[in-house]
Image 1 (tube, rainbow, N blue to C red):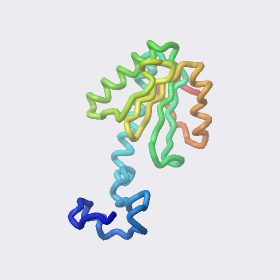
Image 2: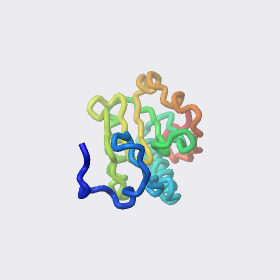
Image 3: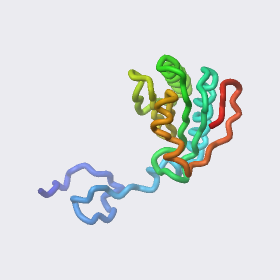
Image 4: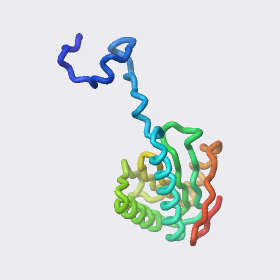
Length: 162
C-alpha cells in the first residue's frame, strides 16, 4: 500500500535515506539523544544521589548508585537500596516521588508498589530500585550490571555501601 503524498512525516526526516517503507526503524536525528546535553546528565546524577540520600534518611541499607553511561544507552544511573519490609519500600518510594515532583522531575512509570518486594521507579535518565533483602539477592542487579562503576556516596545517615 502506497502512502499518500500528504501523509504527515517530519520534514527533517523526509529527505533521510531509507532502505524501504518496511524498515523497522526510521532514521533518528542526532539531536534526539539526551546525552547530547551534558547538563541533563549532571542533573540525572544529582537527582540519583538525592534519591540515595532519601533512602538513607529512611533507613534503607546497602545503598549504591551505579553509573551506567558506559554500559547502557538506555539509562544513565541506577539507585539500588535494600529495605526491611514492603511498608518501608513504599514509604521511601512515596518520599522520593514527592521530592522529584518538587523539582519538576516526573516519573515515566512505577512498578511493584503493590507487592513491595521490589519497587522500580523510572525517571528516564535514572531508575530507582528498592528491594527487600530476598529480592535483591534473587535479582542480583549489581552483578548483572557489574561493569558499571559505582559512584562514591557520602550519605548523612543510614548504612551506605555494598
